[in-house]
Image 1 (tube, rainbow, N blue to C red):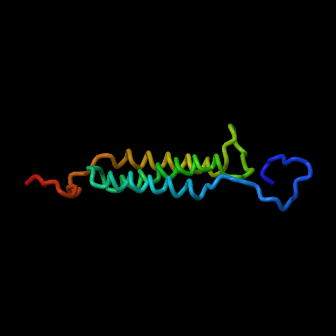
Image 2: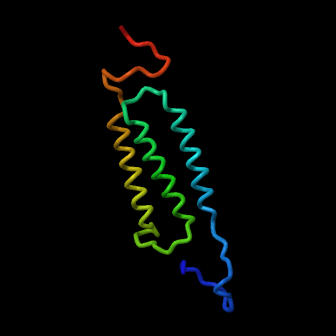
Image 3: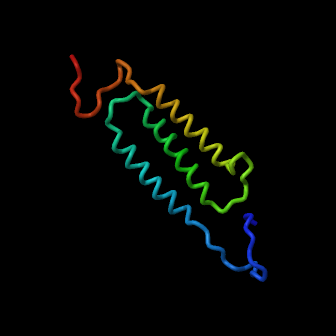
Length: 117
């Protein structure tokens, strides 16, 4: 079913070992959380952290798709549909971050910073 050739005589009910991609996603999602949490008080425009999340989530999904037991590699270089969407999501996040890199003059000061009078 997944494009894997099994030895002759293998029972169709035999369990096939696959990567635990759910665990990979939890670990990378936790790392994404800590990265975003660490950068939450940096000076940047409103919505910048959302762009960072989109970028990191796209990268995470792109990586996990290499380990999933699927046979939908339709595009060049064995790229799956989900990886193509993940690339688009990451690019969207990078553009979103770039557009909101600098805070505007009316943006609130980060926590703990003094405002100019």
